[in-house]
Length: 231
Ligand SMILES: [Mg+2]
Image 1 (cartoon, rainbow, N blue to C red):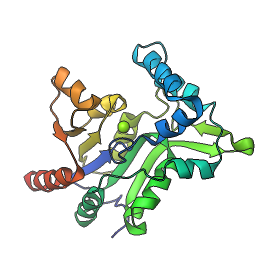
Image 2 (image 1 turned 30 degrees about the vertical axis):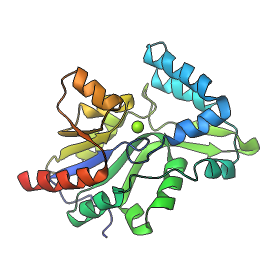
Image 3 (image 1 turned 180 degrees about the vertical axis):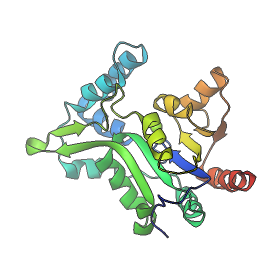
């Protein structure tokens, strides 16, 4: 499997959310809920949803109190799985020189933990991951470094634009997501896939945004082949 192609201009690039889209659980919520309680985290989330705080402030309020040894995070996430057909999509992308980027509002160490448990080294090397990072210091205190200076902490739509700019011929963007944090990225997508029945799917329906609902990555692999043929 070749490394992620940068110089060649692909017809499409695939950009995907991680938590709830590739991973079937939300790794950040698992960690935060354990430390600050689900009730507290949901109260912070509703402040964000009602527009009282930015997503970055939401992240700070959820992550700043986290004190947890890494080994405990590893244990809490031991059952976290990726979509059973995710590898099928990576193989398809590698065969067709289509870059696959993961754009996440989550933490790099948690994403890598889940990937290392669920993917081969070869599959892992094909992915490029854009996310925030969390460092665990003395006393097991977690310190979050955001991916950028935006109100989102990681402006995923901006990351997608930067990736597009790498190529001489601008590629079409296939975006995969599940939640509210994917709305801004969804607007930049040429082909939008939303996990069926979840918040992004609902938002698309309410706002009349063209998209396809998907249940698993086997469907995504099939559609990538069709889209690639059409272009
Ligand atoms: Mg998500």
